[in-house]
Image 1 (spheres, rainbow, N blue to C red):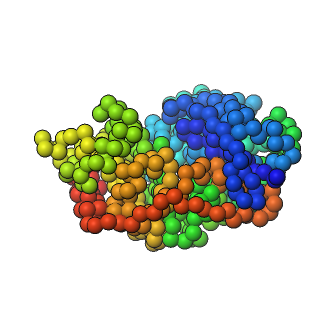
Image 2: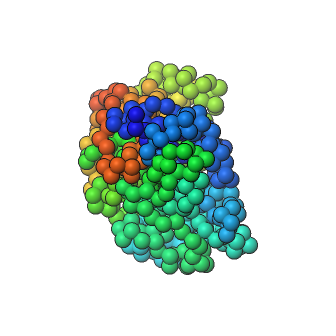
Image 3: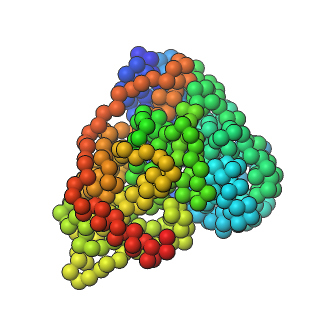
Length: 466
């Protein structure tokens, strides 16, 4: 059997799958955890990859493996010295310490200039802001930086001995243009002080190297890889009018389109996808962990929280939860906190609080869908994925809050599957078509969802003015 391997190195863990190239069927899988931190020694990712690789039995497949590809969390700053050793913990996308640098960069050049240059507006998530923070706050460390790569680039090097990246991941740095497909080294010079060595950008169907023998003796090609959201879009086989809503550690809303979106407000990030097209995306720092935090506050597990939320009133008895527990990226409120409004003695029950946490997540995601629509993106159907989509209360409420049909694909590692699909493309020269299985479908029901949306928007404007 001819096999390809997909890797998903996310904020939380590393997952590795082997996939039958002909059918897209997952044959084996393995995983290993990552630290729950916003700054991480990147060598931990290689250890996790090695563990997950072993769990999936990839080394035993030998010459059956013809291609490998890595999709990973975007934006993380991996700063290396001349010996390719990390000089600082990798600052991840959800590390907001560079918010002041992002604000200064925006003020200095203006939103229009940034969008013209790289089709994004600086926020604390993006790599360039983290490099600016390093230069300002750790100047001696910054002086030792010889090379800057992203998480998936770092793992590409571990697999092949070569550093390389792709359009989708590079487009999240704020120093790469997805429209001209070139690095904007002038921005690095301006905000980091110089231009460290950067990984070469490999085309979507290409490969950057060959698997080293310590991983497998088969000599498989290693594809360009991708950012995690671009990988998920590729794994799902997104078609026009379909928008992916992912409820994971972060919440993301994205789709694949031919023409780039242009948003000087910064709401929509104009990233590249993994096929040569574009991936307009909005990201929320607070997503599934909102439910985890609420469950901990109520002293229950996630299953009990789900039961409480399912049994509660549709509108949570009038409670509204702005779920910005860790600051927020969309809207851009890095210093914000969670807010619960509408409390009364009558509605302050565990069930309503549980329900409000679920509705808060959905409303935050619905805000992002509305922004996409304003920028001309069709939203005919939502594909709901991520660990949070396993929540019965969340998936049942989603269509009514979003106002469009919702499909829940069968549980799967779609980021890793997208990486495997890209690996097949690199190995064979053809992008395979693999069947997508839908587990459940939902339609909007009644008017309650629209009412909850309106009240949530009012609460958000009352607290934050936006």
